[in-house]
Length: 176
Image (tube, rainbow, N blue to C red; front, side):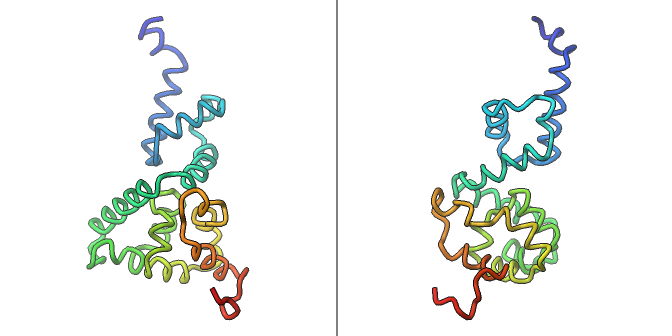
């Protein structure tokens, strides 16, 4: 078949739609996501569904190289700080003075890594400031009980912080 045949086919339109979808959601790792779609025999018509991207992303974030996660988070925080001059200390003020809803979105879209959240005092303070609904949004994305620690070396205290926040562990009784 020729390029003209392909360009006139429904596959061409589907791939163009998929490419636009990846750009619009700012996909974290397009190659890995596309490989996952192919390996899991997902229908091309469904490749632009947020539910598939979310399913892949939750798994991917738990297995990705921590260096990649940190690099992506620092880049996102730096770009946000440059666009928001109220962050006088640059990305150091990201969790202190950044828009809470934007930060929650960054976490739940994989832009900000739990490595950053849990390993900075302002990140832990940010988690502590969230209400129950907000915790419900970010918890699936930063929950170390979902075998993060085993495969990537997450610090043990990460699970304790969340468990205290959602009331599974009483902070007064914890001696860890």
